Image (tube, rainbow, N blue to C red; front, side):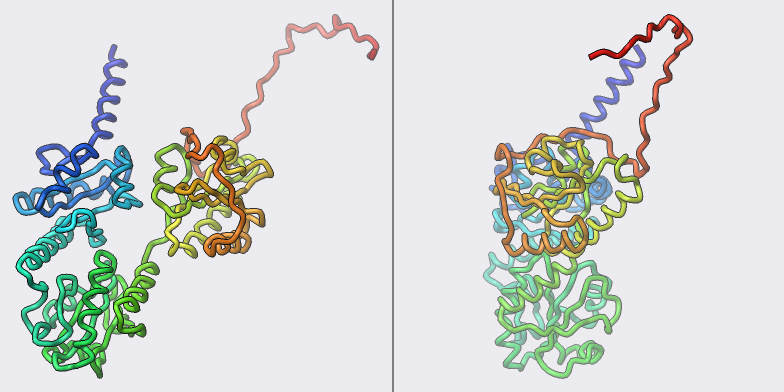
Length: 441
């Protein structure tokens, strides 16, 4: 009886954890495909929405800060959450590629802003309030920038270009987890005036990816001198976690919006962390690695009895190195032990010619390409390079659907163990009674 009660309690706890991270008292609204458009899409209020998965460790770490945010902005900003593991259609609709993903729904509810700052209540609140400010300024017909030199004919300000001064420069730009492009301008500078609309357009396009700032170098001469500004406009690039002036880099791109966007996008992609190499132990881990990705690199490694822990770790290190090399592609990376996911191997036509094996899959088009060369750093690199250029033979995924993924135990990081042999008791057998005759055909 006690065992039954204990089991029931565990099941109830798992159900509770799977249903939602937040309770009604947390002031976080649980959003689903049924109520999302009514509550968020048709509402004039600013919404902050977290897309999470119950099993996600980073989501669990964020939860206390998110509750703190919801309580702090109650009555000013609305806060909601979506279990994107359960409601995948909502995650796909808003291009959610990892957990947690935080989006701010402002004036244009069909095009929310991705929040990529610090995962703290203060950081998220500042971004949400900035979105609210932009919405108010747009309603009033203003551009939304500064009240200082920028409006007097300088580099101009939009709601996406942050006015920098000697007082706030170090606080905002240095030690930031975001990357920054900062323009040092003079109000009387003709080239600065020409750059103004291009700068604002680029800032709007890259909102949530790159921070754009502008500093009146004539009003804040000491800061301009610190960064060796000798002409106008001067543009400096600040990588993430820049902590001193010497870390700033010269911008060497063009001065049109498209050129600025292209240059800054490359820098943003360089700042993207290497993808996680996920072991396929069930449907959720497979979806986490591959869902929403342009391509998914799936490797099938030898059985642990055929390739011990040292051998397997060497293969995994090769895959991680290549994940870092191709991280700009934003591909998913996953692996499984040979024979553990038969439907996956069959659908991608790998494993029949031995392990290790690899296939690159486009689950949107349901097409894949198999590595035919060496499963080595150079062999895989050449294969993936051809894939990135659209070369190589592709084939349709068998069944034209995602294969069935079965649940298996994750690898414990140790060598494999052969099953113990069963001892046969011969004590009751009288060997003298055995009739040994001639072998006949």
